[in-house]
Image (cartoon, rainbow, N blue to C red):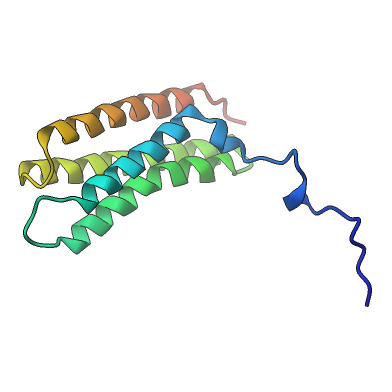
Length: 135
C-alpha cells in the first residue's frame, strides 16, 4: 500500500490556531488556575486535605477549560452557557479559598490577590456573555 505524503492534514496546516487562546479572559483564567494550584501545593496545614485540594484544583482549572470549550462550540447559545459554567466554577474556587483562608491554610494576602484576580475574571466573563448576540 502506498500513501500520498504530499497531502496536508488540517492538524498540520501552519495557519491553524485555537482562537480561545486570543481571549484575554482565558489568558487571565489560566494564570489564575496556576496561582490557585501553587497555593494548593503549599497549604499551611499539618493534615493533607486531599478531597478539598482536589476539588479546589478541579474548580480552578474548570474556569479556562469551560471558556475554551464554549469557544469551540458552534452556537452562541452554547458558548454563553459555557461562559456561565466557567463563572460558576470561579465562584466555587473562591468559596473554597475563603474556607482555606478562614482556616489559616493560606495567607490573607494570597487570598486577597486571588480574590482580585477572580473579580476581574468574573467581570470579563459577564461582559463577554452580555456582548454575545444570540443566533
